[in-house]
Length: 214
Image (cartoon, rainbow, N blue to C red; front, side, top):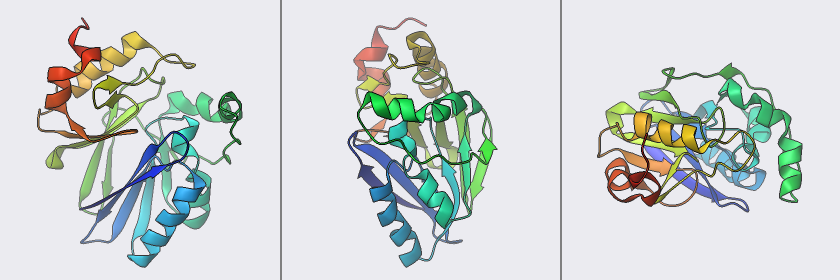
């Protein structure tokens, strides 16, 4: 499996490109802005990959800004949890909060739910619902590779903010404790912002989790 990471935009959001070397099929997770996406389009073409899915961990503007350009270029299936549809509808208002241009709107092709499995060549991703940062936040888990893409739910030494519309600290901590910290400790966590971590590290030393009682 090929894994490419690109940091994009004002919020330094992590975009992840996963590719199956054998089948030349690929998936993008959280394409944050158009400038970054232009480079990704070139990479996909230069390496002769086909893009099957555009997976969104949630609907905040720093994670969806490049979707429309990708959708025009590829026939990839755009996936999001339906509970975050309201965030897409309010993306212009989100942008105004940060004095940013509104992202170009796009169609969601598939509403994903907890337990759904998505196959890209020999890569299988499992959807884990983790509401809290947003009502429809999800993570993407590769069980046979001990890999988790956690969006803005869990970070190195931190957790997602819950002070934006639809956020809930109680739901976030419940999601992390019941659905993420129960994963194998060696699971590598690729977050929506910041460096890579592991479940073991966050379980042992994340200050936002150690004092929480669920």
